[in-house]
Image 1 (cartoon, rainbow, N blue to C red):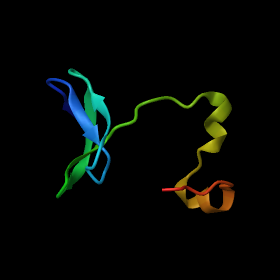
Image 2 (cartoon, rainbow, N blue to C red):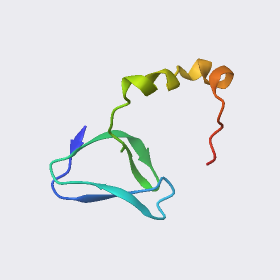
Image 3 (cartoon, helix red, strand yellow):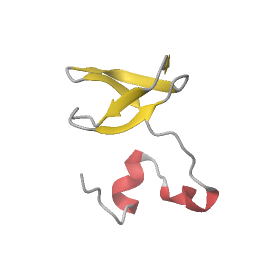
Image 4 (spheres, rainbow, N blue to C red):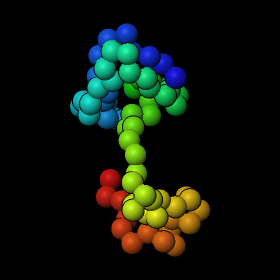
Length: 71
């Protein structure tokens, strides 16, 4: 876990454009490094109880998902 000393831009994984920022004092979980830079876990939020059933273990995803990712 790292703490931002000032506002730090967060780029997409390709490094082409900014997707957000970590504000000064904000925490970022470092997952590793690539030739593009430090990889951080960026999104922090909650899933409300009425939506939590939509999150499944990775091993069960292919048999339960009705939407495929469009990346």
